[in-house]
Length: 76
Image 1 (tube, one colour):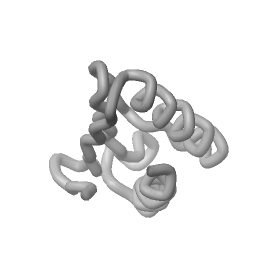
Image 2 (cartoon, rainbow, N blue to C red):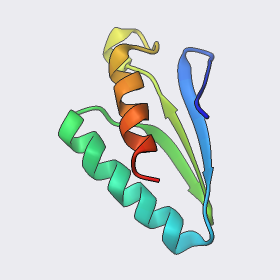
Image 3 (cartoon, helix red, strand yellow):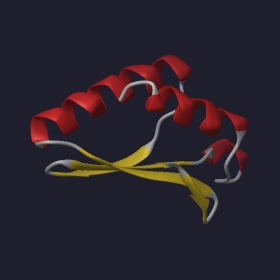
Image 4 (cartoon, one colour):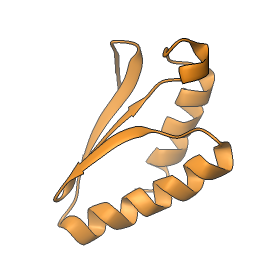
């Protein structure tokens, strides 16, 4: 589940291995590019951490972040 704290939406995703994690990141990247809203994220082996906030809105959570979070959830 997404957690809202420190002016961002955060979620940690765990996958079977690096390939699955990377494939997920690729799917997220395509959605984010279409929305012109890009996540702050990191990947270590099978774990992807995503933080969403809107830089143009003073680095706080907006409806755009919530929409991207919902879109990301559909990719699982």
